[in-house]
Amino acid sequence: NLTDRLERSFKILKGEGRITEINVAETLKEIRRALIDADVNYKVAKTFTDEVKQKALGANVLTAVKPGQMMTKIVRDELALLMGGTASDINLDGRPAVILIAGLQGSGKTTFSGKLANLLKSKRSRSVLLVAGDVYRPAAIEQLKILGQQVGVEVYTEEGNKNPVEIAENAIKYARGKNINTVIVDTAGRLAVDEAMMEEIAAVKRAVKPSETLFVVDAMTGQDAVNTAREFNERLDYDGVVLTKLDGDTRGGAAISIRSVVNKPLKFISSGEKMDALQVFHPERMADRILGMGDIVSFVERAQEQYDEEDARRLKKKIVKNQFDFNDFLDQIAQIKKMGNMKDLMGMIPGVGKAIRDIEISDDMFKQTEAIIHSMTPAERSNPEIINPSRKERIAKGSGTTLAEVNKLLKQFDQTRKVMKSVATMKPGMAKGRRK
Ligand code: GDP
Ligand code: MG
Image (cartoon, rainbow, N blue to C red; front, side):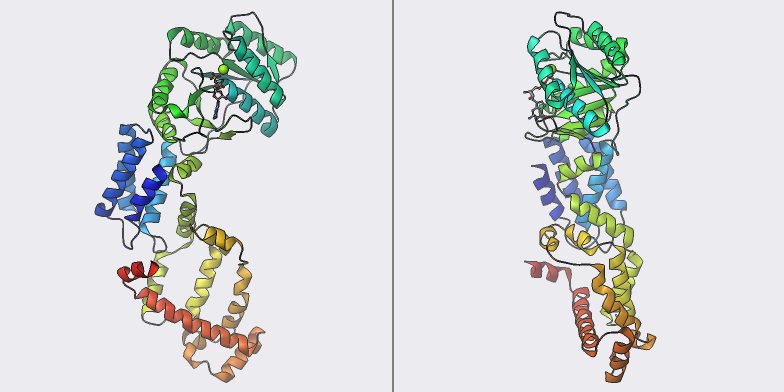
């Protein structure tokens, strides 16, 4: 699957160093292949990887993150951008607001109509009327009635009337009379795009002037979904796309292609037959889902915000020369605190997440350490070797701690310094061997 393949290709980049043309090429090729396999249109995939390449080569890789992680973030941001950048809402202007639902037969229109009614009612306090505009199959009317009952929303039907334009117009009048502020018009679909169906929906659209026309498409139909989306758009000029059946053998790729081919926002994703299985579409979340690496992305973002690369380089130099002192130690603590709750941060690192959740870590941990360091003179901080027993006694008193606690910190500091030096001078090859 896409995630596995991307993970594998990212491994190529997991070593130390920079993102270079050479180590990025293989990854991009793999991403392109994976996207195409996930039903992303070839041209779209090509444009996408070209874009990622540009960004990756220009990227300033932070010391705190590995090139592979950086690359993940770049790919994710580009993916999100490709799918529209930010979430876009539906337009509920009008008294009542009218939402027209279009799509092929079996795409999930009627199910979605029920879900949308449920969402608008429970999450946005709208009063909703469902309209049975699929006049050809009695079973379709029955289906909508059942869904309406499930979510507690009234369903407007006109048994015997075969004119969906009339039914929709009458339903809107009915809603006005009853002070219902939202009308959802479910329509009939065919198995394939045909002129009669298109004309029927277009006629309903002209008559009721919906504030929102949504095109519903089955995500499992892959490339066909893209073609259908294009054809419906040419005829209906809809406002948004609903991707259904994302609970199955999920092919998020359709989301990417539709957005870039049709240039209409995806607004909802439907993932199940239950009435609450509907989510507002968030491009970033979909990108995370496609990549399956959301946590790493947030980690890189936080690190980017807080980590000054220059500082890091200077620090490394000091560490190598064994000049790391208590001032640097204090800086490091401040850095860590700036990055927010430590537990949060560490929880974002893959594999660490679960383990860390059970451990109590807080900023308070540093309180005592900071107090002790603050009680040192500048000379003591930059040259810890001079801290003799009488100085220790003074520091303990000044910081409200005990001699044992001061000793403990000094010992820890000494160890930290040694470990840091050995890590900083380690060659990349050695690191690899150790991790195994
Ligand atoms: P319509 O012909 O466009 O109105 O499609 P329906 O709403 O009747 O849905 C067709 C079939 O797909 C029904 O069996 C639904 O239960 C099913 N279905 C609709 N949406 C989803 C979904 O998000 N996930 C799954 N698994 N099934 C769905
Ligand atoms: Mg239907």
